[in-house]
Image (cartoon, rainbow, N blue to C red):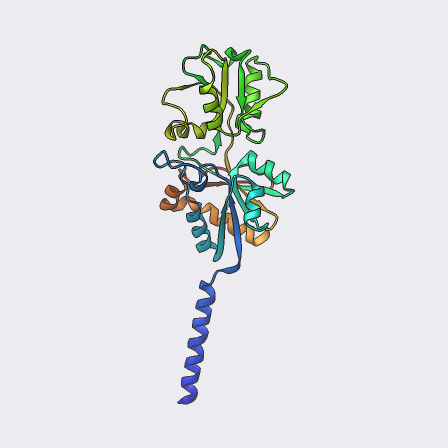
Length: 287
């Protein structure tokens, strides 16, 4: 009888240990760096239901799917983020061109694994050329001789794509490009200049609701006269620390985000992520 009791207890103990092991996340936690300008910690909450993406919810989802802790670090630059994370980084979510530029500066190898759709189910953004509502300019071609406020060089929509649009319309690009650090800075600078100043600014399409919503400019104070070609927007990148089976599991989990209705709401996305081809980085066929 005693032997039988001992065997039963040993069997029960083994079952409990197996269960505990299955429920205990991998101690080697993943580090997700978030540079998305529409994430809650990096944006204002002036527009209801907009620019409050909850990446902590994504981390909780990944933890459940991967059985691995996921630490989230928010920062506007990769350098700042890596200082906070003590150099740890496995995944980066941010503006495509900004992440690539920061990764190059930090000598960090990254590759795109998925792109996040917005509320209109788009994975791109554009640059918008704006003037003050009372300005005489009606089109991009009218900006000859204007002072133009561009965005930083790593923001394709406000720099590279905007320059291409201006050149296409016969507007000369100055040797020294004037840069505003943010869309709000560009808009505020422009509206505060004397009325007779011929000036235009380039802002990101995703930022326009926030300019009025956060009170940077008054409603109707700006007028859009041009739009650039679309460029990639929020992309999820993986670093070299993720490869093989680990990367495959992450990609599989990311692909399942679109099946979680509540998570879609919290990430302010229509259908979740669209996976990228592992070799080319191009988006695979949409679902």
